[in-house]
Image (cartoon, rainbow, N blue to C red; front, side):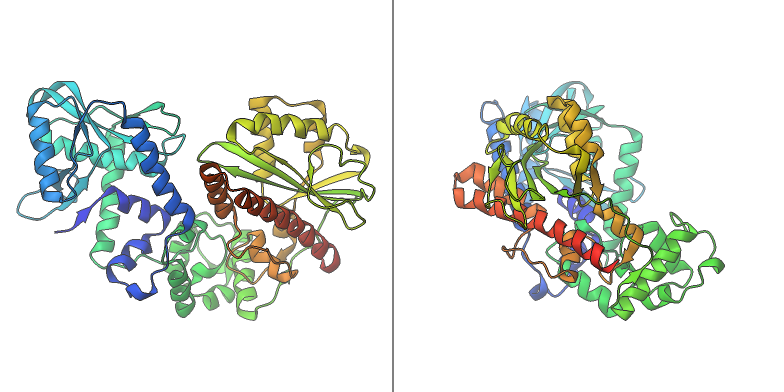
Length: 493
């Protein structure tokens, strides 16, 4: 009997192959769960324990599934007001209804809380609704699907579908989640997708940034390379991949020689998109860059290279870092912290929120600093839209200024410049993937945005200033890399 649990929803959302490899793969090739993912799981447990410590509930503590289900059912029949870590399960058909004769799949879940509510059920004048405690600010798609699974199971075991479930977020706020037919149907579709994988059907290959959350990421890359799969082409939508495969474009070599004009309508792909896919495939095969335009970038004698570090789990931006060029005397280094003495090559300046509650102070210091900048001859380079998005959000929350409007007008996204001018022979286009082409290295082997978040959480937990220094050095390497990319584009474009 196949069993589908909410943890499989998370794995499927990150990488469907995670489920397949866990069941059918060579376990010696399984990598470690990334540190941030491990930290999130630990943090979720801590948040859950903190939230429930003042609640009065019946606790289903056993880890044995059969015993846990039996205890939970006993408590539900007795009308317990609140059940903590109860386990519920039901055999549900592929159509989403009751199954008999072993023709369904067991949907099993362990809601953090089962709340007793007034209404009719098999038990009497009450029924139960699920509540999950999450270390996030909003209800993510996989959270809603988990609640949909719990609700569908409860419909079977108590004879009543809850009208509404809820998430308790990282701030302890209750966010309602309506249980609609659309959500139950969507949950059923996801279960059927997972069921196929559990039956041994290996999902079509696809590589995305979420795949890096899986302990099987390196194995996915190896498998795709071995098959020369078209998914190795950067940033192709899953539905586009499906249509390309249906039209015989299954490998990188197929994509490199495809007749774009002869193809029928491909989902999410214009002729220009298909042409780029073809060029990207050729770049991979030849292991050569392909210039498709001349990089267009404004020139200025005063240059800033900008990178923000933020923690979406705590909803805080904790570091603004700048590589500053064109200020050899350090005229503009009077606000913020300096990690290098101002010199002809540049210096690193940063603003730091050591605690989440320091974000507003960091923002005000940043606003004070940008009042001083020479806007008549200034360009602010960054890579990808994160910096622009975050300063807009922080301005909406903490307030902006006229100088911020001028600063924002100076922003130049080098990711857009790359997109318009050059194709790299690489599977991903993060600045770390591109850095090998302009010979830049990070001091820390684990350096990355996810690692920075892990470090920040670790810093808050331990107060270890060496960890804080790791964050600062990582950000410094990031802004120097942004300068390195700009210089490389100027030289080679």
